Image (tube, rainbow, N blue to C red; front, side):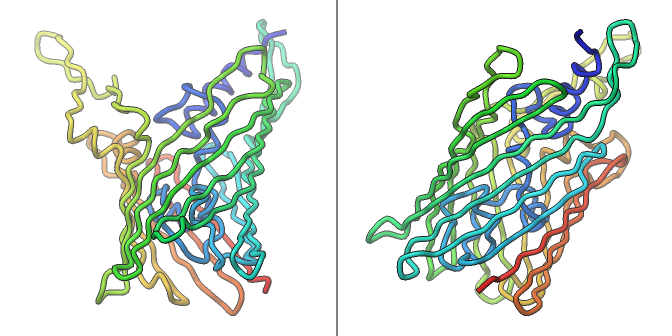
Length: 339
């Protein structure tokens, strides 16, 4: 028997996990941030080419020998009681030339009470999704470009409905070592469902991102600039709660200009002391700030900050991200050097 709570679950989970594009596709969890470091820098950074093995979950072109034998585990208590985490490991083979990467993303939506159409309880149910990825990258000969790809196997269980899918991520990164400048482009979640929830084939959350970053010459700071969701323009919507009414009772809907539209695709971040044992990270997500802000109330939506600490062969990371006055998130991470 069809359950109202199931329909509500689908709607809420899509909106909560990725409010800006919720409902347009399935497996929305694939676009959650991969690590506390990424979360602190605004949520989507694709230009870090270093030890951070979880960075390859978003851009496989960043897989490199410095990730060799690095194991990372990350966890976040997300909005609405949702919990999710990521894991990643890389191994370098063939004289430190060939590096392979494996990653995992898992989300648990918690436990829900089910009811039928007449309001009678039908027991509790849960929902969870996971993706297992395998990635590899290589440098284009006689150039400063690296290309990478990863294949993902996706499983999803929402109440009594199950789905299995597959997707690939493709990334390219340009590295200018003289200027310590990186530029990257990713196309993520290009794939399909192998089995559907109830006979209806749904799209995957395809995402195209472009990023730039550079370490300043005389300051130990690396800045990051990311343009996300370039596959969709415009990305805005008018919020009915921000409509204005004149003395005659005429309503005027919120108007979103071109500059506001550009900013909704923009994420900025900065990392102080990125190569040292202690680092500070800050980020600002303009779209999150704009769409989750409350009129006439300052709640710092879109702001995120965190830190990283290296102790011997372990790296600890923590990030706090502001979403709204009602809820924020904390992200914890641990990376271990197994060499």
